[in-house]
Structure formats: structure tokens, C-alpha cells
Image (cartoon, rainbow, N blue to C red):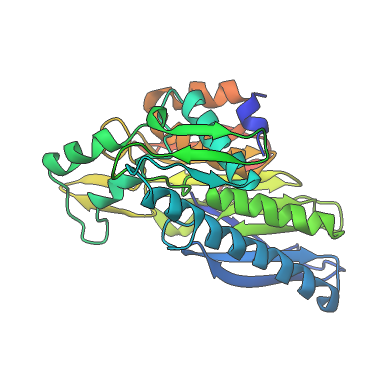
Length: 329
């Protein structure tokens, strides 16, 4: 397994424990990061489960507040506001960890995963369902490029970052939610939980198997029919994440335009309807799904090189899979 796959979308839906389970299986629903979320705790009474769920939910909310580009006080917003000013911004160790991960993703993907490509949102309005002009895209492309970022790491004690071009933006949207799922699950484990999961809009990090030792049954949404599952997966530990062309998208003249944008062209990818990845951590699984979507025809070769399980649906609807215990719906 590669270093990227070991690093510490959104079609997956977690099921509850099987019928007749002897121990309680309690779901705590909440909203965060623009999606429906759930912390599921099994094998404990509600009295013991509730404070654990509150801890996990608070951790997700903390990460959203700290790193969302839509929060004016977030560290990402402070970095973006300084772009082109000639001033660097000091960051703490946690932010440094994520910036290093962004740099690793950029290098590992050949520049396709670029945390500075979020500025393309200024051209693409998926709610309005209209195409941007070539001039709009061309104006933004010079603002994209992790290679321009001046990032000085302080050996995990923090560091300083500078965006040298006015209008440049950082966006942790490609891995922030997955990081939050991992952090919340780690907190649950540190407080003694052995059976449960964190599900952030379908990006899932498990905390061990079900109380009876059996794996959880996770459903992967069909990319063209939100009422159907594409497949179910038996998983006892690790993480599952999905990227697809059906979350923020619109169809025009028979062409699907989705929110996964190629940073080199500024235009949406079109080779894959969805890619689901199984990995030890949600941060790795989510990053790999996005890179695979961006890789186009080279996606399957890329995933095979990462040594992870996957289930992918190409533009024609054909399913490609390399994952154990997957049952097609």
C-alpha cells in the first residue's frame, strides 16, 4: 500500500446493526459541512452513548469552524485574505499537518489535486445551471497552482504560509470533511468506544465492527438514481468514501457538468460517474476518490497502484471493482 493510502463524495449510506442485535445501536443525527451527518454508537446504553456522541459532533463542528473558507474567522479565510499582500500567515501544528497533506496530494497526483483550485467557484454556479465563459475561466487559471504557494513548515510545531498572487485561495474542501470524520472517530476510540462509526455525508470512518463481531453493511448510492443503491459492502474497520458527478451538477444539452473541476482546464471531469474507495482512514479514501475522478482514463491504474479496494462507475455506466465483500444491488 502506498504512503498516500496509509495517510491519516459522497454516496455511501451506513446501515444499522442487523435485526435482533442484543446491544443498543443508536444514531445521533446532525448537520455540518453542508451535509447530513450521523454518529452511530453501538454496544452502549443511551446514557453512556450520548456524551460520546456530543464529543464527536463537537469535534466535527470545531474543524468546520477552523477550516471552512465560508467562515470569515477561519484560518483558511485569514490565509486567503492575505493573498497578494506580501505577508505570510502563521499557522498551528494541526493546520501545518493539513497543508503538508495538500502538498503531498499535489505531488502524488501530478498536480491534479490542487488545494488552490477552489477559486474556480467564482466561475461555476451549479445552482444557476449555466456554463461560464471561456474568458471567466481564463481569468482564474493563473490563480491556481500549489507550486506558487510559499509554505514553510516548522517541523510539526506550525509554520508560515503565503499566497503570493492576489486572488489566490486555499480550499480544504477536498479533504476537510474526511479529516473531520477521522478525528471524530479517533476521539471516540480514545474514550473507549469499540463499536460505531462517523458518517459525514456518506464519507465514513468506522470504529471497529458491530458488537457481535460482524462487519457493518454499508450501501453505495447509485450515481444516476438517488432512490437506489448501487452496491452493499461488508466492512468491519477502516473507512469508505465516494466522489461522484451527481452531488453538485447540472445537465445541459445532454452533457453532465459536475463540481469536480480539473485545475489545469477549469472544466468538470466527465470520465467517471462515481468512485468509491476503501482505505484505513477516511482522509486517504476521500483523497483517492477525488484523484481518481481527476485521473480520467488512468484512474483504475492509479487506484491499483495504491493497493486499496474500489468500486467505480465509468461514463457509460459500466462498473469496475476491486473490493472484497461487495454485493451489487
